[in-house]
Length: 101
Image 1: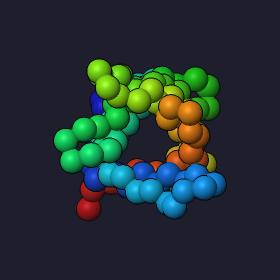
Image 2: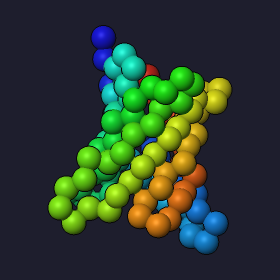
Image 3: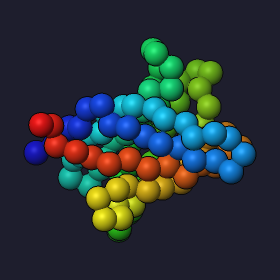
Image 4: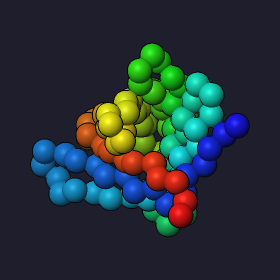
């Protein structure tokens, strides 16, 4: 049964840019994790990560005018940590899934 997590905080780190924070939703299904990350008030990155051993990997389902995004992430303790490649830039990113209170 799929699990859904709302209001997930995604933190993006880059050597020459300040910390960037976005919010979104994560859906976990058997063998797949979907990251729906806001990048403007009405636009989202939609990355369907497929399980590849110990990590997930996927691409943004691009629409016209979107920047290409490829992401790869792994669970370390209770935090997901990964690489987010957007256009020609690479970021480290992290997020944690918490059950609703």
